[in-house]
Amino acid sequence: MLTKEYRICMPLTVDEYKIGQLYMISKHSREQSGGGEGVEVIRNEPCTDHKHGAGQITEKRIFLNSKLPTWMSKFVPMAFYITETAWNFYPYTITEYSCSFLPRFNVRIETHFENDNGCSENVFGDDPTPKNSVCFLDILSDPIPDKHYKKSEDLRHWVSKKTGRGPLVDDWRNSTTPIMCSYKRVTCTFEVYGFQGRTEDFIHRNIRDILLVGHRQAVAWIDEWHGMTIEQVREYERKQQEETNCQIKSEISTDPAPPKRPSYTRSISVTDESSLKKMGVKTEDMLDSSSSPSSVKSPLRLNSTPE
Image (cartoon, rainbow, N blue to C red):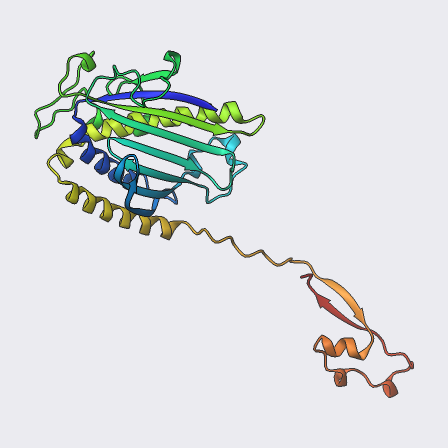
């Protein structure tokens, strides 16, 4: 089990990000869907909790075969997906990832949003995360995979027409207002001897990249979502989910292909009449004993395939 706490700041308020997060997740999921991969939403509905009150629960299937390393893809089926279940009690959320094919795999992410620059030491209200397990992620300067880079999302060049914010500059976390921080405590477990350490490191590297890309996009797309109401962003979310689900279902078949029948044949010898009748052979078509030079009928040889 490997636990880390990630802290990602943004030039937003917590109230603003409630809309921005929903918009970003929906648009990002839509963009990443295609070629038999992406995010299929199974359910998205209100829920309640005795401690956190009213919230929203979502369940998704994330298809990501091509994103697996070569050594791991050898052990998983072609239509491989991870189930994501999230409970959103903003500004506190819990997200869990599991996989039926890998029963000892589990990722749990607790998130708390605060209007600060990442300086709070115990936002989760229990044992503080050890200092050496706290990672600050900078949406301005930390590197992301080349395939995810877009100049329009580079915050060194970003300027918001609606809010007048941007671009970000070095040391922006200590000089920019408004500012908020997304605190994420991530625990991943993969209890398989020989693969545990390598797999848990792989998961955390990918989570880091996902967090950086997603939070950069939430800021870069601010002019698309700023000013939307919660009802408007939920409607946008619903439309994006419908389109994504239709695309995923048309590209991925979860039903296994029927087994192919063997191409070879074998021969069986049958001589008694009762067996031939059971197999559907008309015995009157066989040679009569009177026309046979021998009193013993020659066996009828049939071709069959093994069932």
